[in-house]
Length: 166
Image (cartoon, rainbow, N blue to C red; front, top):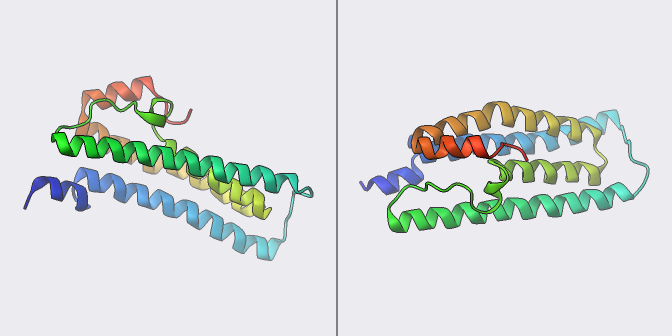
């Protein structure tokens, strides 16, 4: 079996493990919204009395989605370049990755908080903040350890230059 095929599909490979770990963090955000909505059914806490927060939330959803799209497009383009040249990436500062090591997670946090604003869901906001912190301190730490193990010094240098969150 070709080693490149194993790299992109097997959860035992480092590349596969990175995406396996990230999928858990994405599930955390989904669970945060769902749990928040369930709690709001029972608690019925609404803190926003104005519709302005719905507009702010909509803008946050759009902004977060655009950031996620930009990050994923950049990752995909970089991956395609490295697969065609059969080399490992050494420049990690393309697209939004020049500002943050985790733009997808920033976008996901912004987007889900925007959804909580639109839904006027206090519980969702609380659970989203918890999911964001768990992601930052558990899942992203594991992801970065795998990336540093895979790419070595170029990734370690990148970590020194660019912060995790803006």
